[in-house]
Length: 158
Image (cartoon, rainbow, N blue to C red; front, top):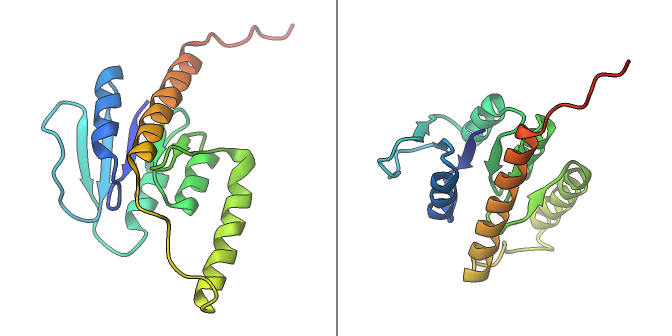
């Protein structure tokens, strides 16, 4: 299991590093430019150069079932969930297979409304409560994924 971080706009990297250290999990921080990451074993900075969605594309190509992705990008979340990864946003909301379709549709409507000038603005700033919710959800998701990885497979049908 690895934790992939869509890092260019990630405001909760320190929380991710703490949870990863607690469970001794590798972290892959994916960004379009150089950034500071802890000089500790298991934390890797992957710099991807190019256009707007290059970091998202890199994560989507490398994530595997059982990994965890942290992102606020809905299309990336959809691609990660489709590959069997757990995915949470920076406010602690988990993207699930049941919910991702509706979230993507809502995103399209919001983009249309913004483009026509009817709707403006973005999400509110991240609060301390949001950061705490994120840390708790990441810990919960990692625990769940580790338990699932240890669970023996069901007996074969005879």
